Amino acid sequence: FARGGSHPMSTTEEPKTEGKKAGPDAPPTHLGWDSHKPVDEIPDSLVREGDGPEGNFPMRSKFEKMCREAQVAITKAIEDIDGEGTFREDCWTRANGGGGMSRVLSGGKVFEKAGVNLSVVYGSMPQEALQAATERGVDRAKGMAPGERVPFFACGLSSVMHPKNPHCPTMHFNYRYFETDGGVWWFGGGTDITPSYINEEDMKHFHGTYKEICDKHDPEYYKEFKAWADRYFVIQHRNETRGFGGIFFDDQNDRDPDAHFEFSKECLNSVVKAYGPIIEKHKDDEFTQQEKEWQLMRRGRYVEFNLVYDRGTVFGLKTGGRIESILMSLPETARWEYNNIPEPGTPEAEFLEVCKHPRDWV
Image 1 (cartoon, one colour):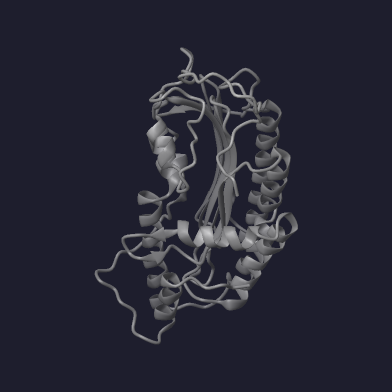
Image 2 (cartoon, rainbow, N blue to C red):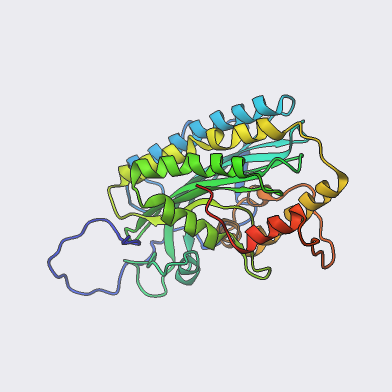
């Protein structure tokens, strides 16, 4: 795919210019850890016409609306599955525009911790930091003068679910839409699963759900995005994947924005369909202390990836995002055991083999 394009431009040659410079009202590259203001009730929309760089306001508004609706639907479904826990809601805004809403469940019957975060950001990024946020070398600073910081708009919904039972996998998703002041826009996202033990039937259901969606939109999507997830979710210093993948995509802008929007929407609205039945199936499974300890060690691997490699975490830290929202993805409990090597032939050793050599599940 041709990634990293910009809005359609004339085919006639235009005189070369130095590129656009960030305006005097563009936000700083670091918004400040305390730049958010808690509010009792979130505004009807955090996307306001006139805020941030010029761009596709209808798409910004439509994407935020989709994220809000999904946040409500997903948290309601997770509460129903848990049976006891409820989501606590925090809302905040920023003076330069944007804000967010976090919904976090802690200490439930099924879930140790589950969070779903909505975020709307108007910010600026140094060009080198923006470039480092993609693996494909896409010119996200296109249209801007060399060395000039890049004002941007970003809206996204992200989530991590950490169940208590070792036979219930952790699940993560993130769907986002970006625009820059230079006219570059793109969609990104994905949903992935991180079990502690292999269950072929569960993985066929999860991956099959997303393959079906991908196939509806493009017959090449699942193969490409599954492979992308297997590459992206690698703990490089361990030479193993964080879990068993799913789909992951970024820099999507090679077709009409509405087509990309519809794909993201269907993926986001299928999270509960892909994940919920697996939790319902295993939430009451019996488990041993050894299995619990193994789950906590895999949680440790989860922490390592998120703090060292995850682009969303790095992006939030570099732009001065709300720290509680950035670190919401981390589990409440994890374990690091010195030089733990599973015995050959055990379920733990078989699991680790899949992390070192990802499999095709469907």
